[in-house]
Length: 282
Image 1 (cartoon, helix red, strand yellow):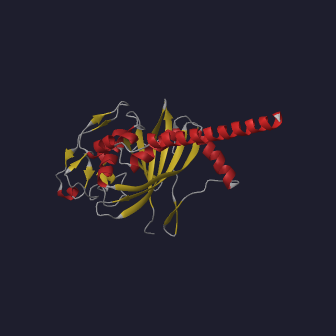
Image 2 (tube, helix red, strand yellow):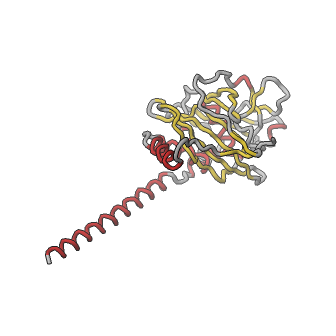
Image 3 (cartoon, rainbow, N blue to C red):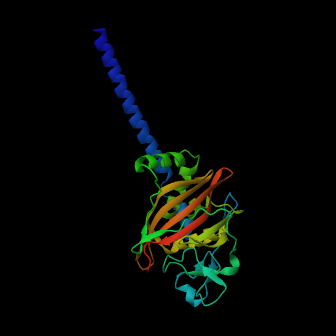
């Protein structure tokens, strides 16, 4: 009799434990979801033309008037946060914009005198692969696929703050929330810009954030997902993302990003970015 009671007690306790664990897991998932929800006040700031200085020292400037007729077609309100766009490549003093593959969203060129031609000492960006003119998502596994992916997943998720950094980047683009991206910029660190794996130049983090804010005003992201995070060396990881968005005429485009995150102090900072189109012209 006592044995039956004890068995029932144990079974009941186990069931309660499972229920508690499920409830706790659901609560944790719900808190994560709530933590990542859209913040309308921050989105409003992104779409505004106001300036703001952030706690990490990054300053986003007040929008300036756009008067060049060849540029105003990109800016219906005739205002832009980035001040150094160039309408054409008919001059030697221009370089391609970090958003040059985002066709029709922003001008394709910016002024060369506002960037720096200084390659970073270590480059973590790789040239993209295309098959039949279509972007190929790399498989970096050199042994059993699932085992390798599990090790890779465990490695980057064990890095303090890195998971939150990838979530911040996703949410920044999903919700047009520039403040989330600014969290991972350092005013003392330039961002190296790559195009299809080729180094172009380095730009002040603040200027990249101003460019991105202009992009967020002009486009509507329909999909942004970091589908892989790859270890490169201690304190350095590559985040690979697929980004789909609609332009002001409702056309959908897709590009791929490789974003290098380096630990600087207690923060994960964006230091290199590569952009590649989904399709090439051959």
